[in-house]
Length: 411
Image (cartoon, helix red, strand yellow):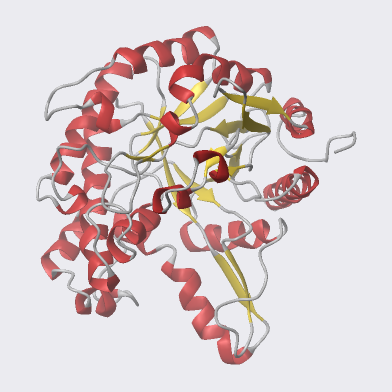
């Protein structure tokens, strides 16, 4: 995928699935809230109109597996047939983009979670191996563990470092078993493992060690997944102190997973400059920082990369600047010989801000405009997608092939 002809332009549809409700916590089911279940065909048509070759799209595990070992594929069958057979777009399947089935008590800390998720993954690959090539075992394991184990906002509602470790380890074991199960069902599968990447920097030598440690923390889940965490790993003592059983760490060390592409999710709010005395960091990232991230990750892992999520919480001109600058970063890094094999604008259209789960205010207050299409409710309550000038801008990039220059035309 890393040559000029095979650069993979993509978009994505936000697919967070947290169906579980709790006191003070509403379900956060993006396909339902954005009406993708009703408008999926038109949404796919919009993606196809851009000329993209791929789309990041997730299967709602909790819906297709209403009970253990039972599957309802009807809706997924229809969508994937339309997407692949009729529109010629390859899905990068999110097997797990947050959220577990309602029947799985304890979610990630259920003792059989890794086996259940691998069984589901095998069923997906066995059924759709003739349509699907690209699989993401689990989107953003660090974010999963943060929201489920440290913040206590998603099941199983644990908190602190001990909670983070308690959810992170079974998440990674589940990813390992998932890759094994998919390979057994579909030996030609291509794995695009995705992580949310923060980027921090400082001009103050007193903070450099802390900043380096913070950047490295982002990749602890990937280190665990690929068997890099032994007793000599810098975060090994912290894991053990937070309750990680050494035999579980040893099992992950002994079962390293191999992936084909490391997906990089980067947003402006994902870091900033550290100043002495500042609470955390100052300001946000700009699009040029994507080049710093890609060089750092390449030097760390030497694995082909793809931008699997990026966009900006901004008006249309601000999103256009982010698009131009991040694509220019990709072009610059590719020119250095670093294999960046694709770019994804994510989400393609308005999503629902995750703060919706924590509130009782109306849904329309939580429309988060990050995409190429901005959505608004009409008088009948239909969430209509309205094209912005970014549609044509992105279409122009896609039409040029692998990124080298900026498209012509106004924002």
